[in-house]
Length: 311
Length: 261
Image (cartoon, rainbow over all chains, first blue to last red):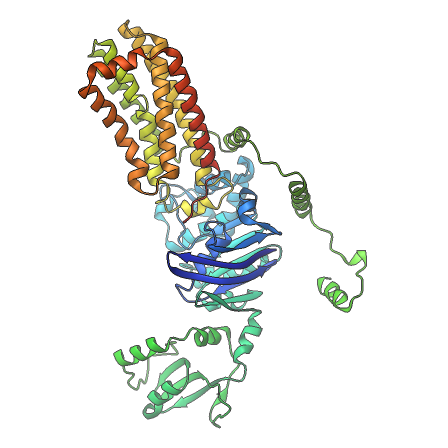
């Protein structure tokens, strides 16, 4: 078990994270928060790269700082910005990382080849990485994190640069990995974790806002999410009165998905089953930004083209 | 089976042994290792740790790639040629001793500065820091290897000078070279580990030649006389002191934990 106890992290006078208490057992955990909410800081601390300003992180009952090398032997880590040597081939880079992860030469070669096949890079394993796309580099990053068959796998925004097919493949891989290890991944893309995470951790204002199963997180908005058609003339007032989760411009007005916390509902409001994305948008809604956006881009009636884009 | 067991535990019923999943081999090994570590904590010695790292990584991974090896070799060759040209054009024995003392750490310095300057700016830093042998442990091994290689090259060079010039005492030349290398290397690593600013980390790099050349120019008789008159046993003591401090700093590097990553 990986345990975070009363952990805070300061950068000078700025408090990035405060009073974080979490525990992780085998399974997939999605760390969900907007950019700049402290996800990367928390993951760096979990990976032992950054010491907490206060509190302690322990693995199997021992401080990871004290475990040091022994903890790193159990760890697979993909940083948000995965660095590589452009003139290396993925196979060479994987073998180098395998060596500094403490693996023998034969095992390193076998496992590197196997993992590169698993992330669909087998055919280009001897090509220099400087010719690779962002998605290919990211797949090398995912493969290297699995080199030492880690018990704790920490992935910071692992799906950046992956196309939809690769994302689907990655989700399937995560499900398999989570059966016998702790997998913690951070993302601001809800669909990355919605179907695969055993638990979701929401961070807000440097604290844990919620940690629960996806369905329980969604239950936070049970009975509060609706959809309705709003005429153009009433749209602005509606936006001011209700947190909007999604809206789509149509010929005769706006199709709005919104949250109503009050008891009063109208007959033409259609109750909807809340999804994780609804919760995410609701928890992290930014009223000031929305108001400024409305002033900058006053919404005209749109007949075509907006096609369900979230605002 | 797990759900069944949880239900039993909640109801206070004792699970039968048959219901308990048997751990796999890896879990068994991890738990045994954890129990042994808890009962008999042993921190491996510096030499065994370095030895294990060298056996694991070998010479192959001490340098990043062929470019780095070629660069180091070219640099080494350049330094040796420069030293050779100076010695061949200088007939003054005391001057040669001073030259040996000043330039002996040059090769070590060049290779080490390049390595450390690049260390935290590399994109790969975070990935390498999360590995069993992290960046600083690799640095420790590298520094020891660089020092050993520099030592051998310097001794070889001093022997060549002694044979070529016929006026340099091999023992004194070697002791001067080795003491200078260790004193500089120890101070360099100390600066790297303790220095908070780039100036304090790299100040010594410029200070060493500046101070020595400055003294040589300002007080030629005093400086050259001092280097030539220090007894051999005093150099031996300096070497021991420098080596002890250097190994101590390399050891610190092995367990070094940066405050910010």
